[in-house]
Amino acid sequence: MDIVHEHIGSSGNSQESLDFFCRNMATPEYTDELLKFVDISTLNERIISKQFLCTVPLPDEQLAVQYWAQCSFIEGDRTPDGRLSHVIFVSQTIHKSKVKELETQKYLQKTNAELTELLAAEKQHTAIIGSLSNVFFALYYIDFEDNSLQEIFSPSRKYLNYGKKDNAKKRLSSMVDSWVNDEYKAAMRIFTDTDTLDGRLGDKPIITQKYEDINGSWIRCCFFPVEKMR
Image (cartoon, rainbow, N blue to C red; front, top):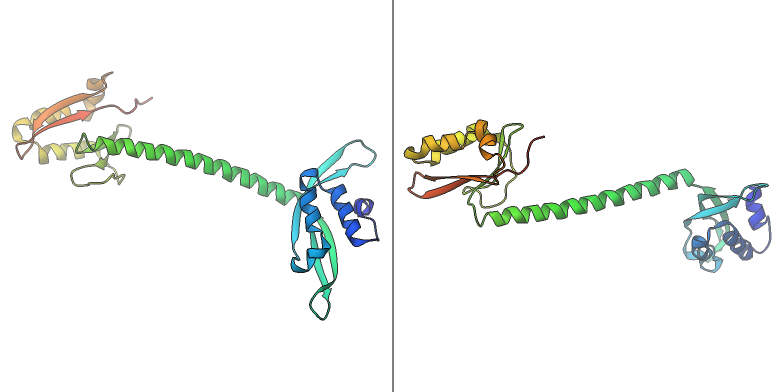
């Protein structure tokens, strides 16, 4: 309270005292905004609160501390025609809650920026996969670590699909049994054997195998690495 009295006084012209308070308590970037807030001539239509950053000199030192504060006008009473007659002007420290709020906003901004980058990367990734559908009629992602096969797109699905994963060995074996002409099944079982695939790929960018399907069409099957296990 002594600090407030030092900067606003205990009595006197209300507008001059409030203006004096703003110029002495608020940091420069908040002074003009706070002066508008304490303008009594427009107060009748806006009984609200305003947050601002204070600068308060430390006693007997050439230093100053800054903290967040909030000043408010509280309605006392009104005249019979509804205009304000008396108000109470208060100022309170909100530093801890304001700092927490700003930290949260900063974190959310960082998180939103990271999400925006991830979405942009995912859109690019999806576009690349989509372009592959013009070359290949089916695309599957195989994870050697958990022996899983994930269907990205296939003849049964005309859209990109990141659905549930299947057992890679069983799914590949089922594909050979269902799609490959009997004459080429043995060769395709060797080609789709995931136990030997890493050694056969080696440092090659791609390995391929042709086969005739059950409808008499010739198909080229390919494996190309995405990343190596550490």
